[in-house]
Amino acid sequence: MAEDPAATLPVRVARIRRETEDVRSFELVSADGAPLPAFSAGAHIDVHLGAALVRPYSLCNGPADTDRYTIGVKREPRSRGASAALHERVVEGDLLRIGRPRNHFPLHDGDAPGLLLAAGIGITPLLSMARHLLAREGVFSLHHFARSAAQSAFHGVLAAPALAPHVAFHWGLDANTVTARLRSLLAEREAGAQLYLCGPRAFMDAVQDAARAAWPADAVHLEHFGGEAAADLAPGDRFLVRLARRGLSCTVEPGQSVVQALQARGIALPVACEQGVCGTCLTRVLAGRPAHRDAYLSEAERQAGDCFLPCVSRSLDPVLVLDA
Image 1 (tube, rainbow, N blue to C red):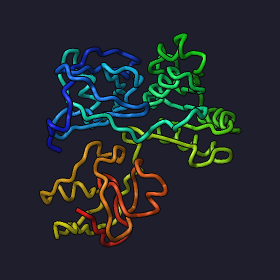
Image 2 (image 1 turned 90 degrees about the horizontal axis):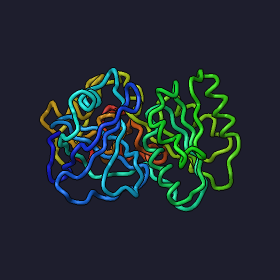
Image 3 (image 1 turned 135 degrees about the vertical axis):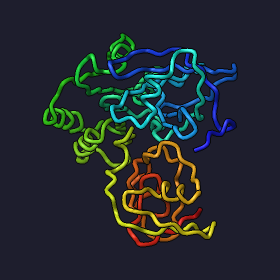
Image 4 (image 1 turned 60 degrees about the vertical axis):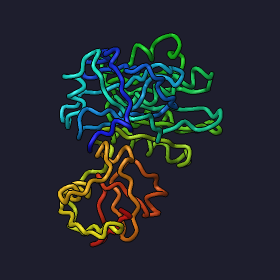
């Protein structure tokens, strides 16, 4: 995707901090002195690391910090370029371009109690929420699951006097113990309480399973991250995509995304994460049934079947007609 300077903001890397062996935090400040746009807890920014390398990262500082953005980045062994670039090439003082903050994971309006559950690097958006709730004296508790204290990103912040009374750590637990702990935490729901969760796919599934009995679906809010956000991309069948406004058709082969198939024909759709997380490529479906493999749409939106994310999703029918 070509970088559009008008749609991005110039920032300078003011500070890089080693949070764990494989997690670094990056503090970004305005490069040209212009105020940074306000954001709400749970928001993310797209970090542009090249013409075709754009990845979303959650903001982990509180919205009251109007002079900087802070992101946490885990060095992924199977990185497609972004985390490796940030860990290996970017240094303090470097200039980057980022997208304006967007929020697909907002806090519920009102004063409802919040239960925040995070695993691993999934702590980043929930840390922003915790900071916001602390600042407004909200009622909340945050539980962080990690392999050890040394591998618990932002442990120093979470264990500091301000947040410590609201935070519980769960370290080195096997899968069965995690499941039992989650069932205990979610067995009852305080009146009006809202549940927020972020972490690896297995953790997210376990939380949702444990919450199903006591927590209604509209009280459970989640955000996936990284390559585990989209469903497993099985090869799938060949199908035809028709672009109604362009009057063109394109065959999508097994193992190929709609975006890739269109790019091979010289047709570019707007994309960013290419993992079904950010929603940049959201496209209207005029006919046919999409096979959703994203982590962006709600269940109701999936059932409606009138939009999909072509970076990861496919088709249940031989022909899928798009408003493109």
